[in-house]
Length: 307
Image 1 (tube, helix red, strand yellow):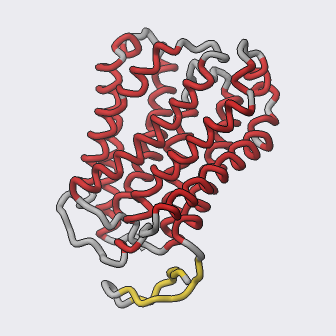
Image 2: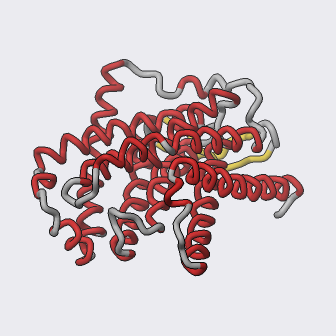
């Protein structure tokens, strides 16, 4: 049912999408003026605008879900959300791009700018989303939420290590079952000049480190999502997958071939979504279903508890 509150939310999200486009274009013009001054054809410019609109809609919807369902608010929510969003969208993607840059013939001197130029955009769009969605003022935090993630240092080390191992398994399984079935993708990597990058003794420690980082980036959502554990898992799955993979709709110097980008898009979206579900299971425990009474509406809704 489309209520007045739903209409207001839709208007806010549309406004955030427009703001995303403006801030993105302005930030790109400041950080990369050469790209902004490129003489693209009207057809190419229109195509880029459509892709950018898709990117904006997807990322704003994910950010809105994270923000609205968070038990945090104010500056804390801005900091937590920006941490996860930047870490997923920029840091995790670019450290892997850096890892593969040399064998794919990509100059590594571009990476300082790639890492730092998205920071102003990230802070502005996250802060604006928090304010527009009505989470700018500090509010009371549910004390039951504060019990989440309370564990001993030994448990932390063990669970983060398990998350890293799970990530490695998903990385190689989905990489082979989905991405590596595309001959064009195989050719892209097999034509690399430095095959040492595929050395398993080098790649596994690198991906183990990324797995630990994934676990850390998940903490704000695991800690502060105010819904059931299943909701937390679904929100986390979306946050870890779509901001990372949606950028592959754009042509880029790493993967100019559209079929290669699509293979990686399907691989990353599916594997990281499942990874988000598994992180929640590892960090928060066993899921069981039962109806509970939600006090703010006195409506009986389906939720989840832990045993």
